[in-house]
Image 1: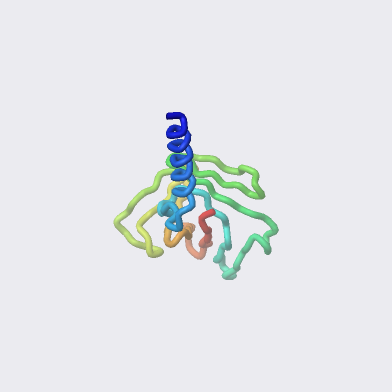
Image 2: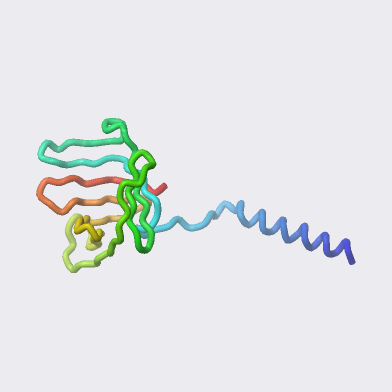
Length: 132
């Protein structure tokens, strides 16, 4: 009887470990929630391209169901609540708008583990992120 219990435990442990190593990994998240790493920002009157290398800083966004957080060089610089609005107009190729409680709004486009945030003003910047 004891051998059967040990065999059952070993078999159970093997099944758990092998299930975690399957080639068909867990599905990638698809919504705006998650952790995002800044890749570049493009815009302004001069059409500038800003990158982590040119600005000598890293920037990360963490977005959960309630909070929008910005980190620069791993230091939290902003933590606010947000709403994700779905609007009738489709501008910037999206109808989703990230509205921060500070009043800042971005048109938000999520596609293929990439996030684009468009500032809502004339000749402003578009910020490009990739899911971490």
